[in-house]
Figure 1 (spheres, rainbow, N blue to C red):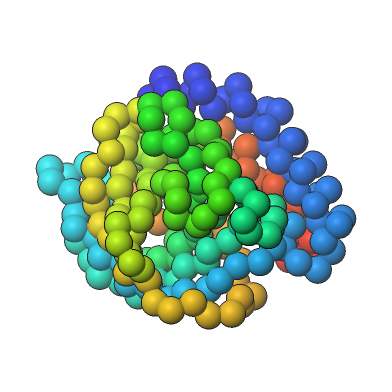
Figure 2: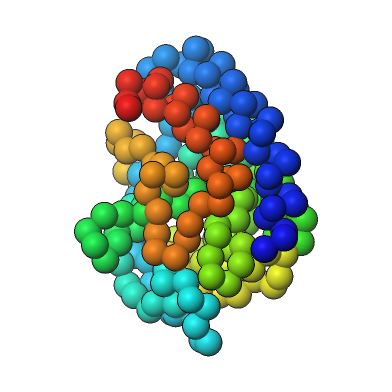
Length: 218
């Protein structure tokens, strides 16, 4: 548990203000579109989770399930291909109580340190994507990752801290559709057993608050 407190608490104080300022600056240029990830493709998909043995005490990872999910593929800044950009994938998963949880992935490395660093890429799935900032779980700080595993298929993996990546499921993607007015929010919409660290919430909330304001949302 010392990992997130050392790495994240120091970054949260200034990081939230930086993200908020950046989001507001982009929103000023794009008053209608999303400030970040302005354009994207919506895809329906099937998420198959295998479950983890032995149990981690993290319901989302421990539970085997097959769910219909929603995916949005996008570029962070919105630069036209083939210019490199931070690639993004948003995933909306139904919860057992009828609500939903959102996971956001961005192109990164997968090494012990590079999994926490954004890496631009020319193509959507040319690099792996991680959740970048860890979730607080009963097993410790957990990151999730997706990586191309064939045509219209992505592997879903997880790692505790800087530990090894372990398979936990796969995504089977449908055909692409035109963009829809869907907003993903990992702060408000969480999955069972994956909580936000207070430091991560402080880091992310100013940017998401600015993004909501640009869309006239509360």
